[in-house]
Length: 251
Ligand code: TZP
Ligand code: MG
Image 1 (cartoon, rainbow, N blue to C red):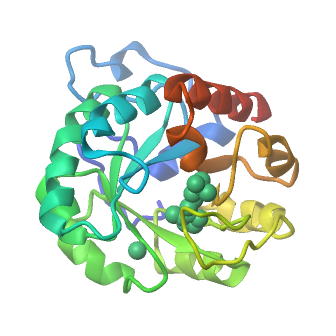
Image 2 (cartoon, rainbow, N blue to C red):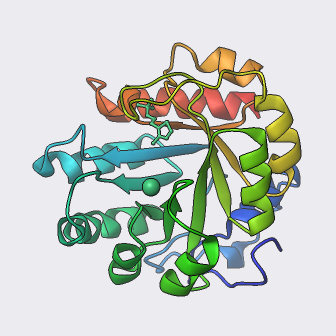
């Protein structure tokens, strides 16, 4: 295991098990399905990481948007709320966590380890400037997934070596969702996927849309994060489904 033998909370599939199942699809056993569990196992591997970003969503749109992302097949939902106080983010996390749990999808809180812990979220996402893994792990506990944003192959390898459960890799293209950061392009995608991606999931991110997804997949990506292209869609569930289907077809 890449996470030091940590055990997942009931019903939450460890990322490395998901990664392994992609290479070696398991034969389903009836005992692995727990119909009465409020945390049903996800039926698909983690291909599509979505973000409920309060920069795009009015507060009252949060639950409908997360429900639509889940209905469309999101495998991960992150709650991202730059410039919101932790107390508000905690409130939002508590509102959407039941939706994610019912779908068997981890809710990842961006930036705020204390919020992730207090909400009982499935994980935490950290940027390059958000401190070491060990400090976050001490707050959120052994079971939580912790991911790191990376912007170069060296950062990707460093995050894997530090013990992160997954990475974001990008932004591939400049994006208004993360202003002021240049796009890193597609040239390193295949190498990072075939090196770091052997150990932990690599989610390409930044400026990805249903229109440019084919070229990103052709460059070697297997898993992606989409934010604005989904949240600004007329039909969030349908747009999510379209992307998920393209990712499944690539496998
Ligand atoms: N980190 C790198 S790019 C990005 C983040 C959070 C934003 C991606 O958003 P979009 O709208 O899919 O380009
Ligand atoms: Mg951050």
